[in-house]
Length: 163
Image (cartoon, rainbow, N blue to C red):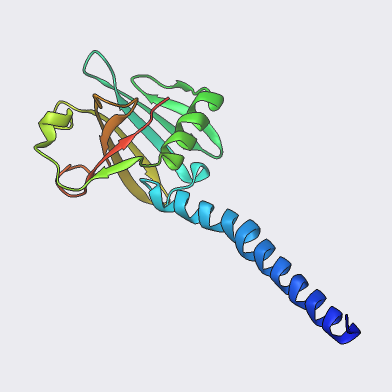
């Protein structure tokens, strides 16, 4: 074989190898991260940005925890230091909550358990308030119906896995 042909074949192989590595390996990771970010219900929320979390209690009241100077504090129903590990976990769970499937043509919100009787989680992050409505479990999957707006008719309903 001619030395010139050998060098050209080596250069072509090196270029092909670089393309595969950069596009498939490195680019695949970036595409997967972008796909995951696109499925997040609250894409502009980071866990460290969450300033308060408010939940309805079983007795009809509400529990509210707020972050002040990096420390969590329960402010309702009484003032008390908050459990940083659990509240940071809740904040991370809300920030990272991702859709498994969007229901494009949903029926009435009540059918999914997302009407006025839905469990609601309100939280504030980066100067904005958000609401998550948690509905019924999906019948054929280990998923739960949720809506990420105060009015479930505003956005498509979503199925997510809640661990």
